[in-house]
Length: 611
Image 1 (cartoon, rainbow, N blue to C red):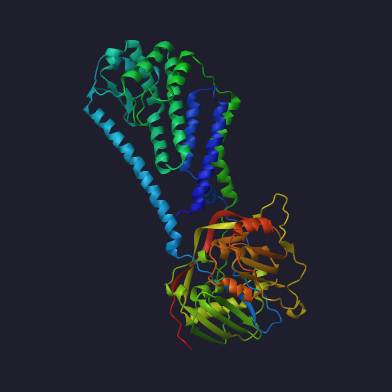
Image 2: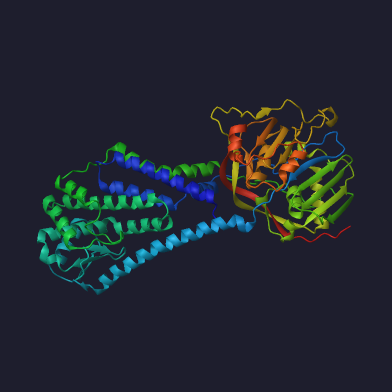
């Protein structure tokens, strides 16, 4: 399953924010042991490998399923009026980007990311081969003063497993290579240039690296860096980790009783004589900010032990990073059933008669599904996929599978029911399946031989919420005083095409006009514009009148002429996006989320026989 861009962006800003919090904590601990700060920076690095969403998902699996009423997922429409013919779904179909056009930017981004990963790993691989070649050509030292000194320091530092010592003629600085079986690569020239006491300080420094498992920590961060090479923060974190680990080893050497002045001179001499290790996972002695290290060693700056308050602070940050999203996941466990998509087989009503014919002239233009008095139903210039989405009350992301002709071929349908089809607008408002949709499900089964099944999938969604802290409504969103449940003949006269309907929603490219609609119906209508399911989470009940105007991503060719014929203003090419328009005009916004959504999979469908 392709990871959504929004999920990646969310993970990156959450990890960045967590690293910033760690940075504040390390500032509070700047006088304490460097090992504590190194551990915190390592946690900040590893956070990039563990999204909060994954922890929340784990909590959702543990938490008890929440039982909610089924969500209403329905295509928007207008309620019947006293007009002889009342369209309840009328829209000019804009050109939608093809699957290739939608996927191409993601594929390009994926290729760039992969090239970056391979480039970073390739550079490291070349450096590792050079170091590994030096280690392989080195000769093992079984006995001697260096081995004796090394074993004595290992015992003093409480290291259980002995470190393998090898000697090389290369000009590489002393460094530990390996994690499970560490090997100390010791340059032969060091014996001639350093005194016995100076050599002991270097050995103590390297033993400290092994005891602290610094090579393992560096390898973990290198994995983070390879994956998130494009994020400057991970490179900065690596520098901070190297700085703090070297400082922690310096503190260990001084605590062991070595003279600070001798140790500082040793580091300076090693820097002049030998090359620094080219990989962070090979712990040497000359890394980090050298002037600051020397200054700290020479002044014998003592690191303070953690106070109880600071211990609590150090423990709280990583624990909160795990516990908080886990608790959120437990509290937001997925419902036992997210949506009710279809009625049980054998219980759907059927049209008495129905005609299904191909539309030979259908091109991008007016698409309509209409109900008429007396139980008459018609659909003009619609694709089979549009019919399925409408019949089962779905959005694009909830319908999967099927042959290509479902999107390419268009049909005209005229049908007659034995009785009234009801008022679809009120059915949606009350969370019910309309009788017309149930009949259309039966028609699809009978004439298109449609066979489907449902499965739950994790999909990106939007939550419609208030954009203002005080909960006030936007200037284009007002409460409706009209009772849409009244008889149709008690309502106001039918409005002109560009005017606000008394009870219904009209959608055109860049414009949505509604009267007496609930915000759940607004959420359903928005879903067709933003390409995701939208759930009403505003908590606002009742019905509303609103007008929403925005600039669509693509304006249908010749639409301005059609809009003029309907008395609508043309689309402003410099207007706001639908997201901005929601906030400015209605006082609402869309929050990106992700959760389980029932999806309809097409197992079988056939061309209908003309009649």
